[in-house]
Amino acid sequence: MVEKRSTVNIVTLGCSKNKVDSEVLGAQLHAMGFEVVHDSEKKSNFVVINTCGFIGDAKEESVDTILSYASLRKRGKIARLVVMGCLSERYKKDLEREIHEVDAFYGVNDQSLIPALFKLDAPRPEPSNSCQSVRILSTPSHYAYLKISEGCDRSCAFCAIPGIRGRHISRTIESLVKEAAELANAGVKEIILIAQELTYYGIDLHGKRMLPELIAQLSQIEGIEWIRLQYAYPQQFPDELTRVIADNPKVCKYIDLPLQHISTNVLDSMRRNITREKTIELVKKIRASVPEIAFRTTFITGFPTETEDDFEELYQFVKESRFDRVGVFTYSHEEDTPAFQLNDVVPEAIKQERMEKLMTLQQDISLEINESKIGRVERVIIDKIEGEYYVGRTQYDSPEVDNEVLIPAGIEMEPGKFYNVEITAAAHFDLYAKVI
Ligand code: SF4
Image (cartoon, rainbow, N blue to C red):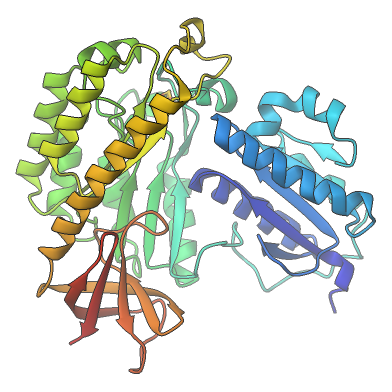
């Protein structure tokens, strides 16, 4: 019988890579006899906050979250509070000095020490047979992220991640295939390959890009039906990868390729190693090889060298390219990045205005693209039931960031299963459908 005080709530902020770190920690704590919950309202004695700290907004959210749990700790509502992740890697000393209610701060590479800290207070652990997995998933049980490497060897001028996460380290194909097979055994049908930079996978281990080989082996795993690729770097994007997306039926016709800008001036000062012409060529090439591909990208507005003309160039590019999804961030002036030496000359209001202009433009493009899908038959996986709808996704939609397909409840459907549906209506970022 697990005692009430043995519940650990892991609160995860930031990206899907953080999610995976929290899930691995969750499995370690579970093996010690704790009940583990993710981002839960459930009463718990112990709380771990996995922070994000690479840009201003993310840092603010992390600090606010720490402060709200610190207040609970101070009032004796929780017995132990631990902070880990990027923010605490980056600002550990400052945080220790300022927030005394936190029992311990860990960075991104010493999180394996956290279970030892909890052991001091743990109830006598019952040997746990209920979890053989190396992860306690925070996602619905039918999809999971698979982090194939850590760190990054690139040096994009705006990015603090290489300084926080260190150099690129690929996991071996064997360990990834083993983990994916375990996930499949536990009911996962869709795996989402993530890394700071997917296309670099394997170079540190084998001297060459190994992502196609990894995908080939993952797609042999019984039970895995979708493999999705998230976060690739445009320079030297391998042709072979495009062929894999086109030819392998398990690989979703989907790519998340952050372009960050289109003006060669800005790309140069961002140290992206690519020009406007090469970027346009790449987008064309990918679309020619995989005509149905859903193309997600992100841009930054207000980089120090971005002029009005550069922004206009970006605006026209987004208008003409008609990407399926676009995320836009305003530039965040971060210490310990190469761009910090530049003056942060674009006022916040202009950064924001440019971001909103792009988002408004993309909103109309998204609606048009979605409306063009009405009448099409698509295979969807059902993620959940929400209110009067089953919420599903097609292969063109990644969880949490892309379109949802809403199917009126009333017929029998099961989360985690695939169904064929007909798209009946469209909104800016959602589709409506009926089962056929
Ligand atoms: S590729 Fe560039 S933006 Fe992405 S993590 Fe590496 S340095 Fe940062």
